[in-house]
Length: 626
Image (cartoon, rainbow, N blue to C red; front, side, top):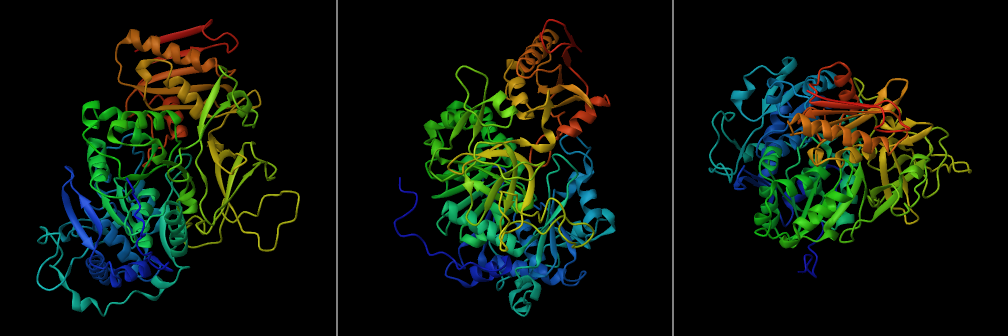
């Protein structure tokens, strides 16, 4: 099937800001085509907005926001239902305010879990000093907001008498629709058309530290997503299908920014819809002609585990052109399992495009070449520990690493020795440094300030003085290497590296070994970290649904021995119930928080095993189960 017609739809001119992108879309030939469509829990259409209707609602909400604070003030934009988030987010920018995407407000009223951690919204609200919080209805606006901030409802606009394709106004809707004629006089704030204006604070996931707000300008957003558009050939014939949270960088950029800079449409659903029934996501992909859909690695694994084989053959995924995989380590096993499981659905392995990115660089840094199968390298584990990406000798111990593509257009990537700041050649493991137009201004520190580490870093030393025009870099804190063709392979986080006998081991490799050691641990979340501060050794926590004490004792012993054979150090393995390993809002494991919880005795243990001598794993050991 030819997914891209011979006559490519006309590309929109590249705007300077997101507000300009919206204005161009609403005044162009596709003004009356849907831009955003929201689906309900069953996959039915919940709401739809054309560019003209979107602009009217954005103007209405921006008019309300113009009465609150002033230009540059922060406004919290929760993950609102339906299409209220894209409307509210764009309204903030239209009014010259700085948007701060956050999780849904009602999470603050639920009991805290390890997955959620402490009050993320409360910490973000205090850090950014927001003047207002957007909500969906007037009834919600009357409730007290966290920190006493004013609640502003997302507004509806009117084109003539009807309420529009979203149906009649919902119960509690703010004062009814606003006549469109009254909004034509409301022009965007001047700063909304300045590409150097801060558009949003994108808070990091907090996998290795507390979440911090990255200051991103309109230019950052446009440049980064234009590069993604060009790499993936996204245009007005493409539909983005997403369940990703809007407050996460991948969800915000691919579901809101990318459609506006490319002319594409977006079909979205609540994250809970996907988790409850992944088939809703796949059915939405099937319904479109040329699809770009991105998700973290765990989402593809969840589809394999949750969708029965009999159902897979009843969905046609032949129109899925780009299946981006990022936001967490990409596993070769996941790519193979998904491609095998959905072969009957006409899914092809080359549709996968593995990528690497981070909020500090807006989103994307690298992405695999579309419709080319992602390369997988079997690397020698001991060579990697010494900082070299040597090929594994079969059947020696190996680590499978998936290539995450080459840098996006306009992005320069270097591999650097983090201690000496010297650039490293191909095949050597070092810290990933990025110079790109998507690099943020820095972290929010109570107000715009001079960029600080890891932002605005001088170029790495390569034996020559830097050119006067050399750009500045972001130190990502991630480790990886590039091959001779410039393909990036990510090995882990600098802060998470396990140092054993002077060599570096990566926790995700240890976690993969533990998870594969026993069927009770298969496809479960695992976390590994140094066994004790200042002492050699590794602790491993594995989630499991198993409750039989004998099976658990067997499982922790098998995992402990497997890990001890992988690295020369004492090992302790703990089995815990599901949802006990802390993780970020994007699904990344918070290893440091997990270590603190286990050391403090706040995580109930189902079973544990420990080795006393790494030289003879299993010879002196202890295994217990609760």
